[in-house]
Amino acid sequence: MSNKQSFVFLNEVKPYKDNWRVHVKGGKLHSTAKRNQMYRAQRNFPIGEWRFIEKFTVSAAGGQYRTSRSQYKMTITGETVFSESDFSDDNPFLSLASYSILEDPKLKTVFLIDIIGEVFELGRIQTVQVHDKDRKRLQFRMRDTNGLDVVGCLWGKYAEQFEEYIERGNDQMLICLIRFAKINIFRGSIQITNGFDASIVTLNPTMQGGY
Image (tube, rainbow, N blue to C red; front, top):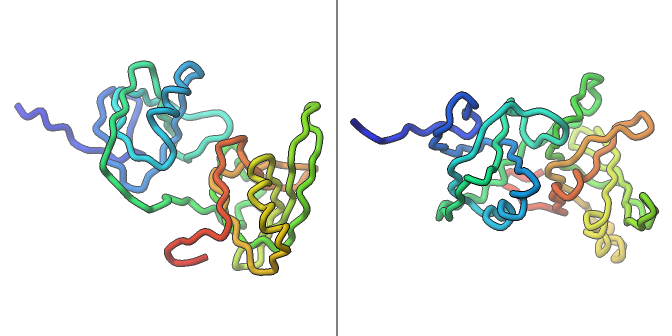
C-alpha cells in the first residue's frame, strides 16, 4: 500500500480531516495562534520566509480582521512543527481591492484588504493623544486609475514612513501600497487605516505590470 499523500491547495483545507499535505499555489489562508504560542510562531515563521508547517488545526473562520476570504482558518498549536524550506517565490500574492467596493452599502469591514493608489493629498504628521498616550498620525487621500478616491489614516510607525518624503517637499508622484489594511467607518465615512501592527506599507512599490 502506498504511503504517498496527495497534495491539496492551501485554500482547500477543511476541518473534517486532520492530516493534510498542502501544496501552496498563490492562495492565502487566515492563520492564528493563542497568546502562549505567539512568540514561538513569530520566531519560527518570520515574515517573508517559506516554511513547511505540520500538525495544525483547521476550523471555521470568524470574527474581525480576517486576512483571507476563505471560510476556514489555520490555528497554530503547541504541537505545530515548523521546518525550513528552500522554496522561493517573489510573488507578493496581492489581492488588490477595487475602490468601487468601498462604496458598496453592503461592504463587509471584517476583512483586511490590500489596496494601492496615488497619494494626491498629504497632510502633516501630527502627534495626538490616544488613551493618554502620544501617537503620530498622518491623514491623506489616494486615488485609483479611474479617479475614485479614499481617505487614509496611518498611525505610529506607518505614519513615520512618510516623514522623509514630506521633509523633502517632494512633488513627484507617490504611490502607496497598504497590505492588510483595515476598513474603518469614521464619522459616517469610509476610511482606510493600518490594522494594528499587522499591515505592511510600501511607498512607490515595484511590481510586474505596473500600477
